[in-house]
Amino acid sequence: MKPTGGICVIGVQWGDEGKGKIVDWLAERSDVVVRYQGGGNAGHTVVVRGQKFVLHLIPSGILHPGRLNVIGNGVVLDPEQLLAEVDELRGKGVAVGRNLAVSNRAHLVMPYHKLLDRLGEEGQGEAKIGTTNRGIGPCYADKAARIGIRVGDLYHPSYFRERLARALAEKNRILRALYGHPPLRAEAIAERYLAWARRMRPFVADTVELLNAQAARGKRILFEGAQGTLLDLDFGTYPFVTSSNADACGVSAGTGLPPKRIGCVLGVVKAYTTRVGSGPFPTELTGPEGDRLRERGGEYGATTGRPRRCGWFDAVAVRHAVLVNGIDAFAVTKLDVLDDLAEIPVCTAYRVRGRRLTTFPADIRTLAEAKPVLTSHPGWRTSIRGARRYRDLPVAARRYLESLTRQLGVRLEMVSVGKDREETIVVDACR
Ligand code: GDP
Image 1 (cartoon, rainbow, N blue to C red):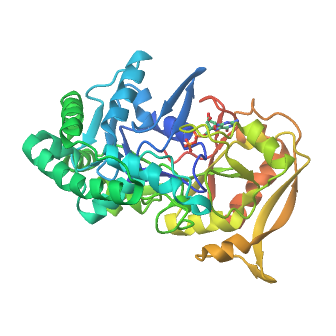
Image 2 (cartoon, rainbow, N blue to C red; image 1 turned 180 degrees about the vertical axis):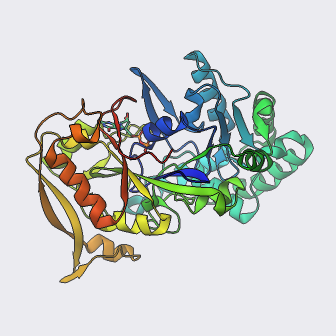
């Protein structure tokens, strides 16, 4: 399929599907790579010829010379983190300059966002969402409450100080009343942010104009989703979700490119399921089978190092993601992690209070009660990491993939059989 608009790469499950590697592969075939939501809580891991890069804010296209990388208005930005990432990339020999543009409309993550994130979670006990404490949620909350501060405000220092004083007056009252925390000082914060603003200056742009101009010139645009559909603020497992639209629906609001500029939605889906943080997870394996998936798959968070919860592929949840994103094709990742299994169960329905359910429930309490109905597939019990063409895969592996794509009505575009760029099978490229 040759789409006329950009390609949107979306996580189909609870994030950590291996989007970084797929985006990296597609970035090679794109002119512009765009992040449109989330913040430094995302963590893509890309391995290029044995060298590991962990990217939090900067799009993976940065690893490909000549690509323009855009951090869109929908992203919430911690300038300290952005600049640290720039320094780290430069330290590893990656050029960062005119190839990076940061939206002047993106909201700034402020020190009180991080502080309130942490203090808020600590007080939640069992109801903890499991945030990364990077201030993302509180920053989006301020955006909606209209007391947020945007990147562009930094370049009008007196206005920036005004906005900061206003927000801080409220935050300091909350910090004192709810947490007995001493007040934060506006001047100290302003000095740090204005110093970072000077270093960020070369990157800051009106990315709405920039992106629309690129699209009008027929440039190939890649939208890089962070997190995953089941963590989407509207369509995920609320309240155990992230604070932005992590699915294809977030692209336009987070970039200023109209929906018709999306040509193809590629869903990145792990051959099994993982989840970080709290919340219901019907196919979770809490015993040795889960430990085995975690160890073989290296399922520890790229940002936090937290162990991920692991379980079997959940076709009910994935079907929901297919629906809300309009997924055209799948990139199935980490198939090699299943290499030594004799049997591979897949969840095809839920059983809830004696009823069979094939739709993903909006009600979190129903999801918490859901027991997976599993169908078993024979394993292939051999290493597939050397496979480079679809036909190199063992018959059982192909049957497994075909069963998933058939029941979900989605075309298979790519299969990832290892961490490295080369360990990828392209079945039917859309670019
Ligand atoms: P993302 O946020 O969706 O990009 O996912 P992460 O980067 O957090 O997690 C993906 C992890 O799996 C990284 O360590 C990748 O190097 C690794 N990975 C990606 N694809 C594969 C694969 O096909 N097989 C194996 N074994 N590892 C993979």
